Image (cartoon, rainbow, N blue to C red):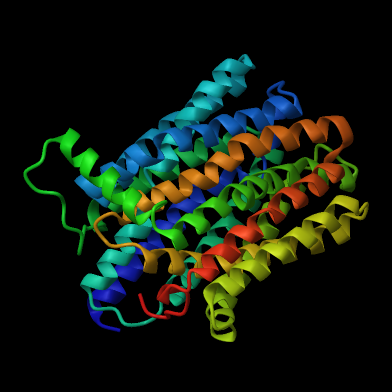
Length: 413
């Protein structure tokens, strides 16, 4: 690996480390934070749904920003918006604000994350191509999973125990400070390499050009289309499964005030993510087609969610959570590499953002539905419903496989 490619990877890993650390300070306690503010389960997961709705609404516009004006610009805007909206969340918690205010700020949080989604990944792939990188993308994304998992482990454990010894609001303030630091890091080290901006176009013309060409390489491209259509079912259930795990484990543990246990749940997912990242390149070598790994991962995750839905053991639930996290994490780098091999550089950020939009759209619908199921029947039965919903993704993945695109076999970026 040459020096430039090594520097690009190092910068990417630092960005992943900082982003994940900032986000994970609240991952272990977010649902508890919302419930402590006076929201019901339905309202808490509806607030999460407004967050994902914000991602749906803003994914394409922010993807266009990344493609037309630079991935670095998009990232810097994301840190500012996310820090500001996180601080507003803290203020809402302090004042026990009405639900409509939580919904509005949740949309802003979604906007902040959309500036990141697609932009950082597109920046990496283009910069590696510019640096003449010749290794597989699975290896790079796998390393990022390990780094992200380590950051999530540190952040979620710290966030849970900081909340326990101080208050549920303090981790949100820590997130704001961390995002401020990442703004400085990106401003200094993140350079747009290998990305050619559209020249001599007005903003409206640039948006129109990028959106049209991105649709050509997105939903109008059959293997990409089927991959994207599977995303609402896997991502929507994944959002709920992770955030519902906090009160579910506390319920099984028998102490609803043990916030450190909620942080531990996120930490377990983090460790699973690290193991999954390490396994991803090996799993890729074990199967001929990338879609084979994706289909097996969804089926396995569905089975594990169903088992979570019927268990009454805290220890068994933790074990199932580890295995579920590993199945998700091991498949993610394979999916990222497959999707990036299917789309061209110039529209990469917008197509990746549209893919994220599809996943988020599932969260808009699935989270309130499963939250209502939790209110009516309990967390266990809601996981059983989630398992059924997730299984719907398998036929779409199979259709992507049947397109027989070279990217399904490729191991090069």
